[in-house]
Length: 350
Image (cartoon, rainbow, N blue to C red):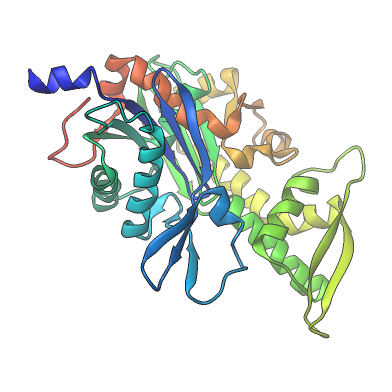
C-alpha cells in the first residue's frame, strides 16, 4: 500500500543506455536527456568534471590527470562505477524540481540482445545504485520496433535492424518476442575505424576518431550517390609527423566502409535463412525496418534491399526509436509486462 502511494510521486523513466549516446524519457515530459555516453574524471580526486557533450569535447585534449572514458562498450557496461556516476548525474538533472520529497524513479532500461544474466544484472544494479527505485530491462530490438510504430503483439513476422554505435542487432519479432536474432559488433564505431585505417593505408594520414566520424556523417554512403560529395580530412602525416589536410570524396569513403556494409548485409541474409518460412513470407510483405543512428548512413537501406531482395525502410526519428519505445511501454502496462525482464531476482515489476 505504501509502495502504491509512493508511486504517485515517483517519476517514470525510459532509458536507452547506448554505447555512443544515452537518451532518457520522462513520462509526461518527453525526452529530457540526449547526451553522449562520455564521462571526464579527475583522477587526482576521483571527481567527475564533465558528462555528455562537455566531456566529449575533451576527447584527445586532456592532461594526464584527466581521464575521458566511455563506460559502455557494445551497449554493455565496461566500467560499472563510471556508469553509475553517469546515471546518477542524469537522474539528478531529471529531478531538478527539489519539491519532490521522494525522487527515486522507476526505470525501464534497454539492453542488447546477447547480454548475459550477469551483464543484465549489472545494468539493473548500476541504475539502482544511481538512485532508481524499480528497474525493468527490455531488449533493444523490441523497444526499437515499438518506437518505430510496429505492433509486435500480432502473430506476424517483423524484421528490425537496429544499427547503433557499438553493435548492429538483427531480430525477427512475433507475438511480442524475438524468434531469431543476431548481434554483431559491426556498427557506427567500427565504420569510424574503417575510415581511420583507410586514411592510414592510402594517405599515410593518422586521424582522430571524431574526425573520422565527422567525415562518415558528412560524405559516407553505402551505395553510389547521384552527386559527388567531398570533405576535408585533417590529421597527422605519418611520414613527416606534421599536420596535413587532404580532400576526400564519397567514393573513397564508400570504399573504406564497403567491408562493414557487406558484413551487415551478409548477417541479415544469414538470419533470414534460419527464420521460419511463415515469418519470412510476412517480412517479404511488410519489409525490413532500420532503426538506430547508424541507419542514417546514406543508402544503407538500398544496400540491404539489393542484398536481400526485400523492401527496406528507415524509421522516422530513427536515432530515438529505442527510447520512444520505452515511452510507449510506460503507457502500456500490459505490453510492458509481456516484454520486460526483471534486472535481477530482487527487482520487481513496475
